Amino acid sequence: MAATEWEAVIGLEVHVQLKTRSKIFAASDTGYGAEPNTRACAFSIALPGTLPVMNVEAARLAVRFGLAVGARINRHSVFARKHYFYPDLPKGYQISQYEQPIIGSGEMEIDTAAGPKVIRITRAHLEEDAGKSLHEDLHGMTGIDLNRAGTPLLEIVSEADLRSAAEAAAYLRKVHALVRYLDISDGNMQEGSLRCDANVSVRPAGQKAFGTRTELKNINSFRFVEKAIDFEVQRHIEVLEGGGAIVQETRLYDAEGDQTRPMRSKEEAHDYRYFPDPDLPAMRLDDAFIDSVRAELPELPDARKRRFQSQFALSAEDTAQLTAEREFADYFEALAAAPGVDAKTAANWLLGDLTAALNKHGMRIEQSPLPPAHMAQLLQRIADRTISGKIAKEVFAAAWRGEGGVDDIIAARGLKQVTDRAEIEAVVERVAGDHPQQVEQYRQGRHKVFGFLVGQVMKATGGKANPARVNEILREILNRETG
Ligand code: ADP
Ligand code: MG
Image (spheres, rainbow, N blue to C red):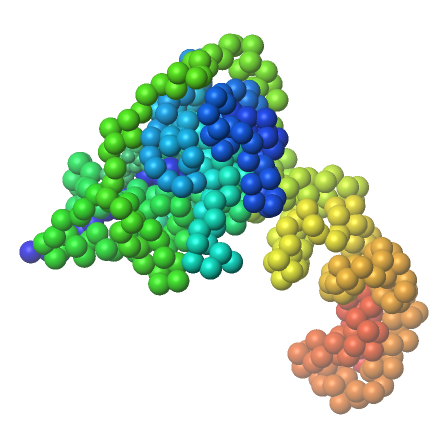
């Protein structure tokens, strides 16, 4: 009998910290990195008698996301208490949304190896973040920092439409790009602004019913989401092929050991004793509010990608890379709009030398020492033949190091391309005189030495001679003196 072919089934729950100034139900500041508990107001530490007040900005950002994924915006939604005990949750419950979330079903397209694929979004709901337990520097004790308690989160739940770890990573990247385009979150995964739980199961190919799932908690990088799911899918297959059964449970991914291990048995919804929070009225959104959010939606990544393809006649691959990050796309547009800059050349430099330099220094495009105007100058000097593409790399490196403007560097280093006929001719004559053997070979029809002679001329001019002019003049001189 043939071995069973297994299919992975994956659904993600992505938690996105929304970029509001104050917390979702209190006036204290949000924001990462403050001294512990300096942003823990009376409500954040659950002092008796304090009451939540909804921050409308959080609803605005949630609706912005909902509109971007074509989701139903629920005009009536309800906050519910989700009960569990944990030291970083002093109220003993988290305010979340349960049966009536603010955002209903929508969808998002991802790129897969087999082409574009639509992933359905089940819902997205608002909730408050919990505090943090600190273990470092506390010598066997645990500290509680409640600065994060009450930071607004949007939890985006996908249908179990993902079929591989790679698809899950592509989906997570897409969510990341989208929330940054929408400017609803900084998306900083190291700081926990975007984290995800992955639900994983397998089933024999062709079977309709889902298998038993496990949930991998709190994954905070694209690389880990892929590795964690790969490991977990393999583990499921091995358990099932060994005749065992998958236990529905919550597991943690251990990046160092590249494995997952059990954390706790999966709680059921009834364990949380959800009920509508009596301290908060139902949230009602009117059409005027939703329309005002729609009116301020920016151009979204997919639309921008399509526009770049037609406006700049660029390939699908180039445009996918150029539009993956909003700031990157902004940089490209500013560069391509500069006079005398060709879009394809701009894309090549951006995806080539500039990206390489940014990666090498661990920098983001917004931090580039060469802003678009500066980069435009460089491309203009190539276009007007002041410098060759090769010399441009040297100018780029010098400009990156802060040696000055493009024109200053070209002047200071004497890099201006030589196109003057007399000047090039003099060098060609000298090189021909220095290499009588090669000249002779050329004249006997062994034209392969031509490249060598061009190289010698380029070397003699420090790479500054215009290569086309050198070719032309050298060929002339070699042929002229034949007769
Ligand atoms: P819970 O509230 O217990 O976290 P949900 O029913 O809301 O569970 O589902 C959470 C996530 O798990 C969703 O993304 C959903 O698509 C996914 N999911 C549900 N069942 C399965 C399954 N059998 N295999 C993989 N993913 C699943
Ligand atoms: Mg869950």
